[in-house]
Image (cartoon, rainbow over all chains, first blue to last red; front, top):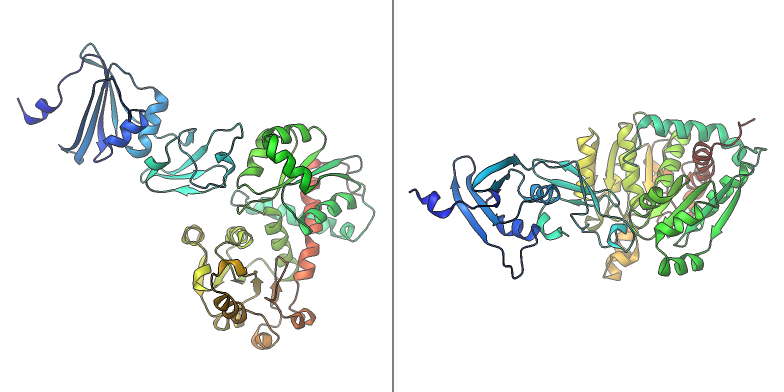
Length: 154
Length: 299
């Protein structure tokens, strides 16, 4: 048994998020809403050796299949991540996260004076200006976010 | 302003040119029977009054939300609801609001066209259009060399103007105190569009070559030390002495109000166009209202 196999044991049902940018696994958990006490079985691997990435993180969530909205959010901080939906120990679905052109209701505008940070009946909306090194531009006030995107997740 | 194409801007400026004679008081009833609602959630004199004048010069009428009513509404009802309601009373809305992005929100909820008359520190596109109209009338937009002077960090007017001038291939020189330089992001955007951007702290170095000198107000509150403010304000003051070596047809613009940036003696020179610039807000806003509301043909 290799070292890698010892770290990642198969799960029966759930989601394995692979190829997360090294160091971002905890932010992925934050996006998934797992930052308080939880009963879910979660495995987190950080900075493991990857042939393509050098280093990567992996998150494994048992008994939960990620929905598209959640996947989009992950793309913001880990654009190269792949999602494996596991059913009865087998990979039922496998796909790469796909950065949308428009991010709705996911990120809070850093501009405190932006109309999207008020009680108006709207959701925040950001245009994805650059998909490689992510640049987001608020559709309301045009403020851009270029780094620490995880800090602005709603 | 970034979303306007050069063709769209040219269409507005051309129509403004056609309508300008009526801005002096000619007989035009193109918007007779039409109503423009003015929603100013912040105080404004010239923008509000020039929109009112523009509407009235074309035979239309205006509804006005006073600042007090505006703030009362802002406290209770959402802006979205206010817009939905007032949008049913008028043929178009003009909005000025302290929050950035408010005009875009208004456009989402309004059943009629919305004109942004300033959204917080965001945009003030009708000011930019009247600036472009002034440059076109009093100087030239092609092959333009323009110097933007003063507060280039917080001044939304110069940001929008710089983006628009990039469409016309202008050569832009930025002159400001170090603490009030234009944000790097905007400079990068302009350069990405192929615009030549030069930056200096010394107006003397560049004034001889410029076709348009666009002066903005340096606000006292940007400087914690009043002596520093006095020093900076003095060093950027436009005087008749400074104008000795400028091009014969160089024009000086200012979005107004001015507070000491331009010596009143300069007003008498042929270079001073800032009061005409202020007037040009009327034909430009007439053109926008005509394009958005429609109305009858112009005689």
